[in-house]
Amino acid sequence: MFQDTLGGGHIAVLLVIALIEVGALVVLWRDRTRSQLAKVVWTVVVIALPVLGALGFLLNWALGRLADRLNRAR
Picture (cartoon, rainbow, N blue to C red):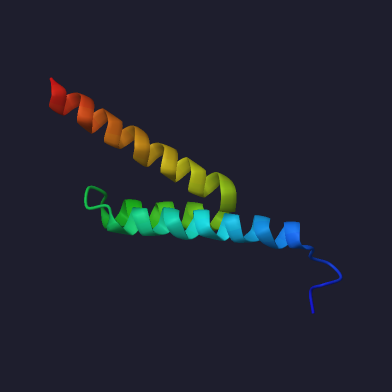
């Protein structure tokens, strides 16, 4: 069906993007520090901007965890 338009490389890229999206949403909804409103807003951003939204959320999440660790070390 998609053999004429999608090669193996395209399918691999789509699979990686889908895994990043799903991973970001799983991390987002398992995070107990964020409010429900923040989770809904981030979900909309991740879905509306597939790669940028997911990477933006994951960067925000990682920096938040780093800040928490630095605050605890003091």
